Image 1 (tube, rainbow, N blue to C red):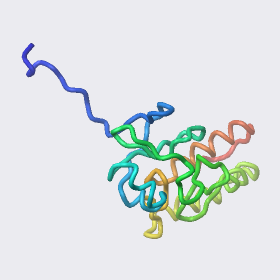
Image 2 (cartoon, one colour):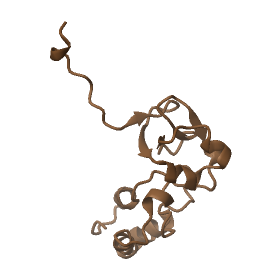
Image 3 (cartoon, one colour):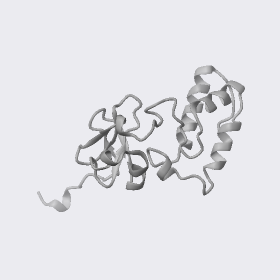
Image 4 (tube, rainbow, N blue to C red):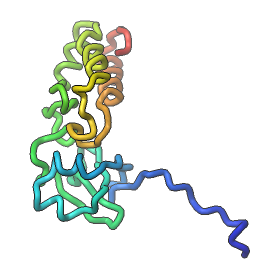
Length: 155
């Protein structure tokens, strides 16, 4: 068949974790340097993917199927460790979200959203996924609010 009529698959920039199958978030070398030990850095390519599955033992993986286990992270990260800050830049935690839900407010969450728009937000370095934490905070807020039956505004 003539190749002109065959469509190549789209490159979405996403890759599935070889251990759990979750889609990984693409990260650059600066993110890897901030979160992995020097020995672990040598185990993956210059660009890799973060596995955000809380239950998966893989932290990062590359397009060649090489993986770095959670134990090689320099410190605990969310969601691999639920007690770790969701926001690596400002130390915002699950407890902060839970407190907003309990109080029926969005005060802490809204403050985080405002801070995330400042130069102090260094998500590419401080977040293990290299991405801003605000969408994750919003998902968690909505999930906890639904579980508690509390009515409140979305952050």
